[in-house]
Amino acid sequence: MRKIALAVVTLVALTSVGGALANHSWGSYHWARTANPLALNLGDNVNSGWDSYLNEAISDWDASSVLALTGVSGGTTGSTCAPTSGRIEVCNASYGNTGWLGVAQIWVRRGHITQATTKVNDTYFNTPQYNTAAWRRLVMCQEVGHDFGLDHQDEDFNNANLGTCMDYTDDPDGPLSNEHPNAHDYEQLESIYAHLDGGGGGKPCNPHSPNCQTSVGNAPPFSQASRANGDIYVDDLPGGGHRVTHVFWAPLG
Image 1 (tube, rainbow, N blue to C red):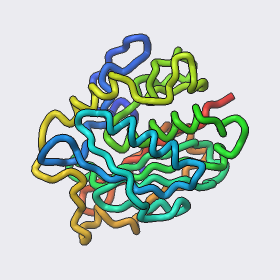
Image 2 (tube, helix red, strand yellow; image 1 turned 120 degrees about the vertical axis):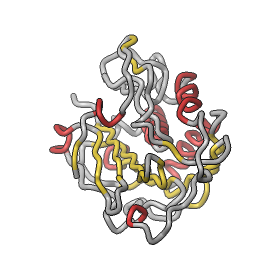
Image 3 (tube, one colour; image 1 turned 60 degrees about the vertical axis):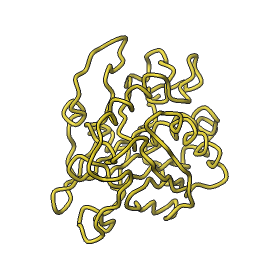
Image 4 (cartoon, rainbow, N blue to C red; image 1 turned 30 degrees about the horizontal axis):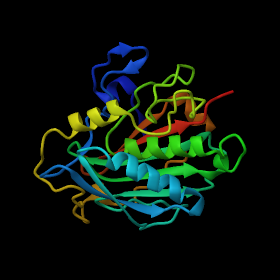
């Protein structure tokens, strides 16, 4: 596994406006499709404590003019959270005292996302500090947003809230509330998905392609020690594809 500096991975021009990113696409990654909106299924592998937050995130992101999202039965388990080609799997489990609240992973082939996962860590969400509606909404909304190709608008936990779940904060209910997307997130999605591709939305990989195999490992063992390496990691897969991981570290202090 190799760590790539955020400025290189995102491949975007940064314009500082109050600490926010004017362009917050994630490395120009996107799902291929022949028409908009992008029709995409999200597999529900979460328990009853997370169902309402996943459904809320699906509804929030489905409000985008370029996304048509459907929650479906999960194809994996929370502890494993193996990807399913052509869709997003969303999971929760007690992953341990790893230092992270959530992890989003995308598998990329020729710049197109082919499968994705979101994981939320109940080791932290079962504690009084994080077992709140605001924290659950923020992390679920943000990690699912990464799976569409969005990055953060701001990455300083101490800055004033921007009113979007794609903003780091240590006070998610604000003011402003960082529990849902904002208009700039929807505008960024429209920019990311402005052009059409040769493949359909959520088009599965060839199951014989090494880029679609789950056997290469879907969850590097990120730990507190990994925090020093940053929050974006890229694994090169056989055949030229990549697995890209975004780690939401718990705020320090």
